[in-house]
Amino acid sequence: MKTLVCESLSKDYGNIRALDDVDLSLEEGKIVGLLGPNGSGKTTLIKLASRLLVPSAGRITICGEEPSEITKAIVSYLPDRNYLPDWMNGRDLLDLYKDFFADFDEDKAVEMMTSLNIDMNMPMKKMSKGTKEKVQLILTMSRHAKLYLLDEPIAGVDPAARDYILRTIISNYDENATVLISTHLIADVENVLDEAVFLKEGRIVLHQGVDELKESTGKSVDEYFREVFRC
Amino acid sequence: MLGKLIKYDFKALAKNLFPVYGVMIGLMVIFSLLIKLNLEDSFIFVISTIMLFFLLGSSFMITLVCVVGRFYKGLLKDEGYLSFALPVDTQTHIGAKVINAIIWSLMNIAALAICLAVYAFTVGTLKDIAEVFRMIFSIDLNFYLSILQMLLLLGVELICGICLCFAALSIAHLFQKHQKLLAALFFLLMAIIRGMIMPTRFYGDFNSFNDVLFISPLWYVIPAALSAVYAGVTWYILDKRLNLQ
Image 1 (cartoon, each protein chain N blue to C red):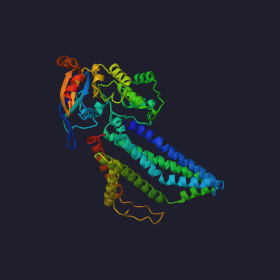
Image 2 (cartoon, rainbow over the protein chains, first blue to last red):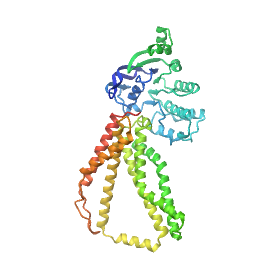
Image 3 (spheres, rainbow over the protein chains, first blue to last red):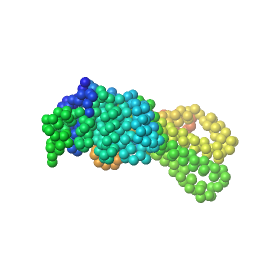
Image 4 (cartoon, chains in turn purple, brown):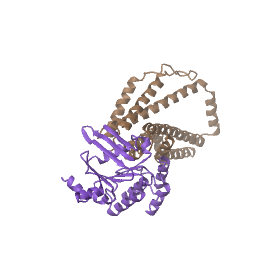
């Protein structure tokens, strides 16, 4: 089954075209890397799938539905910033996710927070940047969603935290779900990816299975990325 | 979902507004006790009186700023990434914010009523209070009907003002820079336009406590219609033109 489908999808910001006639189809059960340099349209594509933006042209669907409150119930989205209210503590956030998302697994979230010694009574504003990012990831991955949209989940964190984040993603996503990870840190994620999508100036220049890509080019995804996006 | 949104918005505002109302009531207790003990010449009386009357005078403005700030922070800044990822439609988000504004205005009125009660029961004697109640019950019913109309009018105006603030912030969101300044300018512009549309008088006189104040229906209809327009503008921008940075 196709989880995410884009048909001739375009997005303009004023006179700037951020996404240009994108056609993309992602199957369930895959971890897909959305790879490209800054400004290539990765975040725009993810925002369109989360319905934080509406397309200028074309169409995007999630499990056959155009983005709406219906698809938001099956999409778990991790933005590329601290988006949780700073006055809330871990317990408040668990309550909020439980209240709004029917697929939220509270026990799983508590287990992950406990294993990381996260104080659930501490307000977000008192947590370190790294701890905030872990809480955000835990909440996102504790949902049994059909589609996970992770926007730069490993940018700005130390290598040990990167390993933790990737382990959390791999060990927590549902096998029928699709995980779309946007990043420009290819070397760190390529071992967990099933497929890679290269975005360049708003256009898809490659969409291929990672094993197939390595076989056909004789290079790692990171090496091939550097070749495609050489300045 | 509306109830859940209202609950979390209420909690967020309570963090800011309950302390304000608490301080206001606390200052009224101090003020009343100092009067009761004939300590009006003390330094603490002067300070507490200044702070108290500042809070009494500005409490509605503080409430309004917090309510509008919650809209801005919760929907148009980073928290908007969470708000708009929730399986809730845009009109429900706007409805929750407006209902919270009404709830907190009523909370503000309740806090002011508590302040009045604190003063009355601390400074006044039972005889004074009984006299006030006797006076209240002796006033003609028409006076209360007039007051009720005024309260209704204030309610409609409050909703209109809140929706105007939300619309001004939403329009400013369409611009990349100076959003707060632009929001203030759009607010002023729309408030001026609104002032030009509104009728200039009530079409009735209120010379005596025995008359029922006649307020033209336009004073209700125009703000209600404008509220719908402002809410519509806000909905359109949040639903179709949102671009969180």
